[in-house]
Length: 138
Image (cartoon, rainbow, N blue to C red; front, side, top):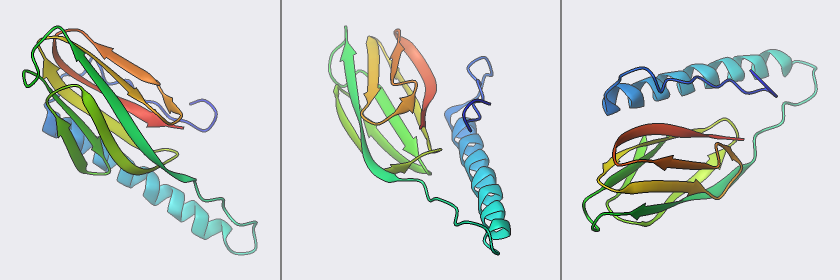
């Protein structure tokens, strides 16, 4: 944990896309529940708890070395999936600090994904094959 962040590196854990999505949703729900409980506890006389800033976010997906349509990239935010099968942009809508954007897919080419808001990491690159990672919104 660093600067109020918790990062779980699950890259070495073999999970299906459905298992990954279920885990992300469960972790997000648990953390939000605990944060809400803390906010309720501190709301009795304590200073108000600052709400995270909500902002629009987009992913830029660049796929090289394969024909359009031979790839699949899915971004998952708060249980909602957005999928494209060629280079382009995925608009995520509103994100806030602490959100996790799951990235899943496969490609016969090289895939590079960047996000336009502050996140860890700011860019993901994948060699040909299946991939699964995420952005943690700062």
